[in-house]
Amino acid sequence: MAWIETVAQGEAQGDLTPIYDSAIRRSGRVYSILRLMSLQPEILQTSMGLYQATTTHPKSPLPRWFRELIAVHVSRLNNCFY
Image (cartoon, one colour):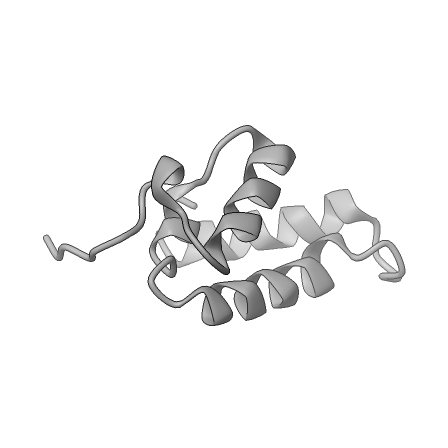
């Protein structure tokens, strides 16, 4: 199994701090998928922007539950447990 260095939830500094704080406000914790990009906060922020624009944006013509259903289905097809 590969090992990737990450920044733990309580150790965020600089540009990573507001990103982690936002994640904690949304879900109560920082999930591993976010920590995987923690060494490059600018990439993490861009990734989160893309996720939010495609999955949670209120102006989407599809309801949020349906967009999330699509994301879950694609993850299952890819054998991804996220």
